[in-house]
Length: 313
Image 1 (tube, rainbow, N blue to C red):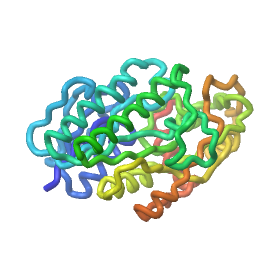
Image 2 (cartoon, rainbow, N blue to C red; image 1 turned 135 degrees about the horizontal axis):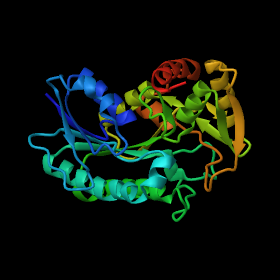
Image 3 (cartoon, rainbow, N blue to C red; image 1 turned 90 degrees about the horizontal axis):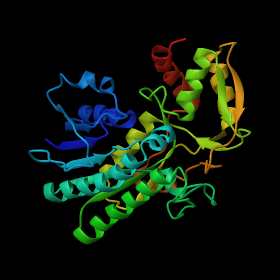
């Protein structure tokens, strides 16, 4: 029976990955230091005989007894509000944490997949973004702690692959949404849902013309599963290429929630906020036969059902 270590296991994406690999018959070792993760996301797995959990910070030495066949490294603050509040932890988990897990993969002779991000492209000068684009990143701006942590993560992962012959995979994740997102994590979808449900102003930055592309979490998990089991070591974009402006997205949330008190308010655009985000997923389509299946309307309904339960009116 294959055994997999998933870091960031109590987080939004990490918890869904735990579910998927349990479903696929793997023994799953979850690891999280819980600075942004929530045990509520995985407590349903605690009685499961094929699931175990370690409360640990991967920026410190990582030891897991027994065989490990695969590692998914998803530990990191992942929203602007988190990595602006925890800049040092963000840099450490992307650098020291990745180094520790690559070392563990080497010792265990395990294949490791690391979670990178569309943020490696910065505020892109090419649109849509494909894997050959090197990005437009401000290394000393407020978002630099996250952007550069992930860029370093990719670099050290490829160094281990090229120098040690380690089996590595890199996924560049674009905006993803779904149940188990944190209510106050600062990203646009939780913010809009929380504000709309409470009958507050939906905070649109700038004039709302900046674009994003939203991928439902089940689609992303399917892509990650396929990538892990593939033979491809270079980065692969994963996201939904259906592009929408933030203002259009706010309108969709207002119509879905249908709270007459909710409305749109405008705030200044944050520093280095990307103007465009749209993945080119041609590589994932050809390599993995993968593309998103859940359209935004259906995905938002599922996500709204979740947020109705956790947001106090």
